[in-house]
Amino acid sequence: MHHEIGLITTVAVGLGLALVLGFVAARLKLPALVGYLAAGILIGPGTPGFVADVDIAAQLAEIGVMLLMFGVGLHFSLDDLMAVKRIAVPGAVVQMAAATVLGAALATWWGWSLGAALVFGLALSVASTVVLLKALEQRGVLDSMNGRIAVGWLVVEDLAMVLVLVLLPALAPMLGGATGTSAGGNLWLALGRTLLEVTLFVALMLVVGRRLFPWLLWQVNKTGSRELFTLCVVAAAVTIAYGSAALFGVSFALGAFFAGMVLRESEFSHRAAQETLPLRDAFAVLFFVSVGMLFDPAVLLEQPLQVLAVVAIVIVGKSLAAFGLVLLFRYPLNTALTVSASLAQIGEFSFILAALGVSLQLLPQEGQSLIVAGALFSIALNPLVFSLVEPASRWMRARSALARRLDERDDPLAELPLHTEQKYLARQVVLVGHGRVGRHIAGALRVAGVPVVVAERNRERVEELRAQGLPAVSGDAAEPAVLIQAHIANAALLVIAVPETIGVTQMIETARTLNPAIRVLVRAPSEEEARLLEAGSAARAFVAEHELAEAMLREVLGAARAEPRSAAAAQPAAHPLP
Image (cartoon, rainbow, N blue to C red; front, side, top):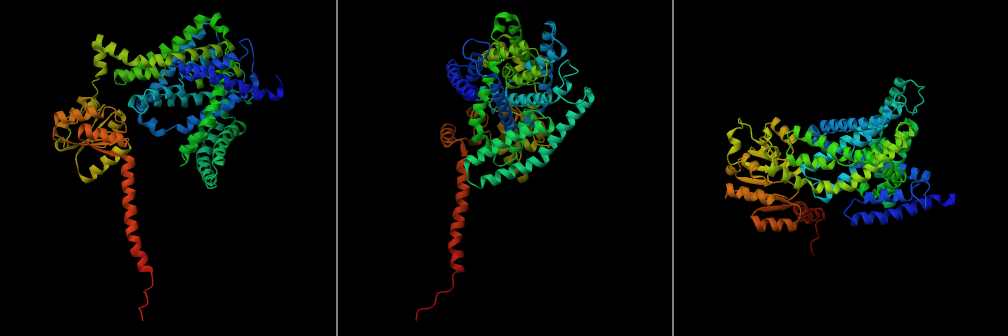
């Protein structure tokens, strides 16, 4: 292969083979990511035939890491994390610790060093955000309470891994690896310098970047050039990632992550995410292909038991730890099973950490191959794991009284407090959902002095509402017990303000059964859904786009009627006819 066309050959063969194998994986109902990894294995040095340029692939992978982490930062929402912080933060930390201990213990049993065992365990402890989001989207549960908990859990894992990537080079000498700093071998000096550099970089990004970047996007947007806008976003992501490494010694991953976080502050964040998505996806494919090139298939023949042990830790060990933690936080059985299935795989952060561990001479090459093998099998099996959630839940409930009790958790937030004032329990409004729409409705009702009881799936939000003195119950209002606790039988009005229509029919049926005269108002996502709800349940449905158009039309008509009078008043009086 000529060096002059090494880049073109690597990109062409890598993307072409990834397309073919990704398509095959998709037809087999597997994540396309499995096909991308397989493409890398086929063109890597571990298999016969064509071998792509590993050095070029590694540099393309670095760009893929930048854009992957930029995308993570772009979608990172502190509000989403705060909504589930009481389970996501301690749950993720304890689960990562448990998985790290399992992986490190296994590596120590194999005779690896402390540093290798620690890196190996950490790599097995973090799940793939890309795989999780796609799995939840395919099942339509991304916006459900279970989906939000799983995503919040992974956000905490991602943040923890970013911190690990920052500190590992400074800690490498103590763990038996090569130094990643120039602090003369003084561990505390190296660690202090690393933390200082990271702090300076983060402060610069939060103070200067969050003002400069949106301003720059605004200036570029005024040119009206779409390609300049896209170029500005990509250039900022890559430049900030490179600058963070060159000036502050911060990893490309952290620099790109903060570039995405800063861009999220801009009003153009959604447009930036949409227009850079094809480029991010293309380089993400190259990243996974390059990871596959690092995999040595011989490990499957030479160390099958080690591979099986890694897969067991990822799919069984992590899942059991998460399952127990979710139940300890008094969440239902179905939530525990969903979160467990979400975490039963590893992905991009595991690859990034493994590559860093090898470069710091902490992790042996076979460790990287075992991690890639664990990722390959766990990602391939993840759809099967997800498909077993409902059957497992039914099987456990049918055969175990304990499982039935766990599924019907005796949650103190699922019942109104005994001291709830009686004014809230007679002719009140029962409001289902306290999100963006429900929050405004509840606030207006309180100002007007109208009693309201909120039914909300988010336990943390229910706690906040009760702290504010507003009656609220935790749970899915599609379950009759939740509306019963909200005293729907005495209510004058049921307002369903949740964005999805799943379970809305059951809510209305429960309300009509217990209170035949109750009026029902429903938020509908589309006009078709609104027509179906109104025809099938005699409820009044509201469509956001329709109500917005009506409000704007009223303003337009009001301005149009006022305009002729204003124009006539401004005209000079006509001269009388002679």
